[in-house]
Amino acid sequence: LAYVEWFTPFQQPESHHGLYKVGRLIRHGERLASIIDISDIRRSIHLIPNFGAVAPREWMSSTVLECCSTFFVNPFSDRHAYLTLV
Image (cartoon, rainbow, N blue to C red):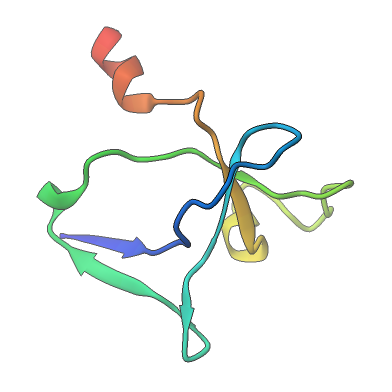
């Protein structure tokens, strides 16, 4: 089993860099999450924090997933394909 937090569906990519922006799905003030069978997971994705003009100093690799509310999906990083080639 795996714990999964859900994010918003893709909309149009951002015009200036072509990346898709996603945010956490919130229901009743809580993050929408599920416990799913691991066989239902197809791929992982690489999320890039939406820093804005300046990255906040309190954002660290250990806290950024909690601090940041929106992310960009990195379409250039496909860990599955990379590991298949290695």
